[in-house]
Image (tube, rainbow, N blue to C red):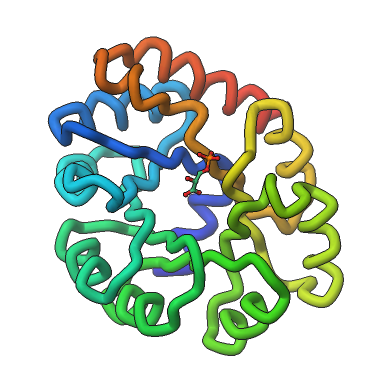
Length: 209
Ligand code: 3PG
């Protein structure tokens, strides 16, 4: 169910944002993240390889394959067909979020302002991504948003880094923190999965502190 999926995301605590050039790398990438202690990824649909990466990793034990940068209902349908278990959008488009939800995908829509939080909440989305959180003001911005929305859980993304990860995760209502730093595009292209596993392990260490 959607709620148990978000509890799994919450226990993982970190959502890598992947921009993949070659779907053939997806399986090894997922295994490196999982073995480093971060058993999920958002494969963005910014590249054509994103959908194939979701299909290639959706069956991996101990790994949650998500879709990211889902901008249109057509992409929502494609993400559902690819087997995405969760989906993230940079902003809030009710039609896209609805389509994903109707397809059985756990949706974490993006928001940046109180108005957007309120709209997502009234449509039944109480877990939201805050994008671009680091640029909007980081933890203190999240604290300000938390005031009027005490039951909303946030996934900060955009400008999160190893130095701020622990501070975000100290907030009980931060579901997870998200970013791309642990999955450098060039390391994936080189097939340097040791570097990625080590970066994931460092994330996991900060999470578990
Ligand atoms: C996202 O879609 O959330 C961002 O691309 C991730 O942001 P980052 O690259 O600054 O980590």
